Image (cartoon, rainbow, N blue to C red):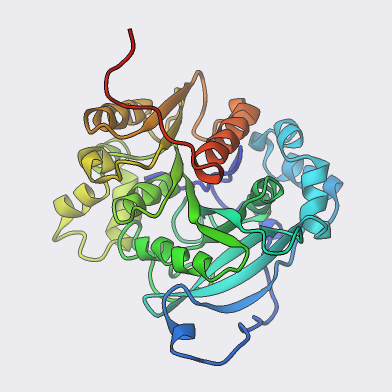
Length: 359
């Protein structure tokens, strides 16, 4: 399975330098309040502190992209992640960013919580659970991820993201789509505990490995109003056949019992083989580039065929010549994601009827 973390619209395959880390240093501020049994339940926030942000000026941000990773196409970033978004995040004028720890299976898992600042009292915002790509420290949440979260927060969403267990100093072991799926599910009670969140309006947004995590989460809950999945690996058998290094270097090392239970573990990570297990009323937006070498474009086509057969609500968008990150279609990707979340999460619009109809 591919490694990059997905941004709106870009992402990084690997952390390219120490200087790009955005959440660093400092002692965690423990969550306030008595240590009640409820405070120790899964989904409870046990530590939080302000994000320590690099690239304090917009010029530093653009310069880093130009010098550190030319493939990121900084000109595209500047069109999508504007100076206004940067200043809202770094200045804290419109957006509040916190580095958090929460409990999942009793483990302390790292994450990030970004929300709109202020506003009328008692306003409850819709929420988005962001699912990062990659495995281990590759794909960890970095500064440009927070820029994406700020885009959504300025749109009126509370955004929560998980590093998954065992990553970025968190407890436990990342199982690449095993027990770590509960780290996503346990963000639902976390959001329920936020006074400014309407927990009846929660969306999922994942790219690459994060898109697989979205499918695995959707198979276990009907609490998600809508989801966006980009460049999703949907058939693990096909993936490891095409890219055997992902089996030897990732799955065999990270998935417990992999050698003895290979077939069943690959099956469990192949949502195109169990599309009927997905909720019947959660609209899915599938985004895929036709020039993606990490995830073959016809994985999205195959998934769409199975969703259609199972009568699950979805829209598939194939981007001509789009790479794994849809670098060539950044602005359109951002627009489609925002519109989908607004319609089906914020506004809870009904999906059109799936039965054949019309003249």
